[in-house]
Every structure is written in structure tokens, then in C-alpha cells.
Length: 174
Image 1 (spheres, one colour):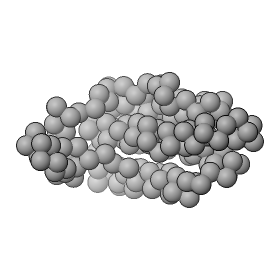
Image 2 (cartoon, rainbow, N blue to C red):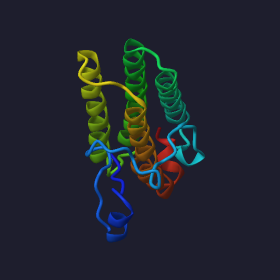
Image 3 (cartoon, rainbow, N blue to C red):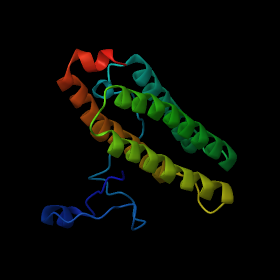
């Protein structure tokens, strides 16, 4: 899900939050996540080889897309790389969802919905790119990276915590 960022220091002190991307503003420097790269983070390890491999493939696809945007690749290349990222995400989500079904994860339905929503948002963005209505620029790429990082850090961490709490038996099912 998109991460809301404080609009400015005053709003942050007051607890008010407005998504920086909704207003068309540039994300405030004081709150900006460093999305110059999205590299493997050991905290994202699930401990299931197929899932961890698929997650690394998503990160690699994201980095290729980010590199193309930074290198000013043409719109066709950017759209193709966004499609490759989405395909890598779909493979990852199939792996994750297989784990959740196999271990009867109680949060599976919500997690599946998060996967669906994330892919649907990217699909609409890809459609807008293909129609020429939208450009894939650095802020958009950072937004995608922020969503991936947030999903790995939040939703997937909840799953990993549950798996660890359930013990080896839950992991052995997979």
C-alpha cells in the first residue's frame, strides 16, 4: 500500500498526514526514503528458498527498471521493464501464497488482497504508460520501490513472524 508521508514539518508535528504523491508535490527531503537502490535486506528473508529467490528476482527487476529510468531509456524500454517487474512480482506472489495455503496462514485472505491490489495498481499504471497518458519517471519509480519495500517490511514481516511463532512444523509443510 502507498505509504503516507508527512506533508511538511508543521503537519508532521501535529500528526497530520497527507500523501506527498497525491498532491503532485515532490516528496519532502526530510522524509524521503532512499530509493536510489532497493537491495536485498536480510530482514526480508522468509527462510523458504523459493520465496527468497523469487523476492531477489523482484528486486533485480526493480533495479533494472530504476536503472533504465535513471539512464533515460525510452518509453518502450521502461514499459517492457515494468512488465518484467510485474511478472517477477506475480511469480513471487504465487510462491508466497502457496506457503500461506500450505500452512493455513490466518492472514492469507488479506495478504492475497494486498498482492492483488499492488499488481492491479501497477497494471493500471502500465496501461496508462502504453496509452501515452503517463510517463515512467524517477518519482514514479521511487513510488513503486516504496510500495515493494513497504510490502516486504510490513505485510510479509507479519507472515514471517507468524511462521516463526508456529515453529518448524509450519515451515516443514512447504
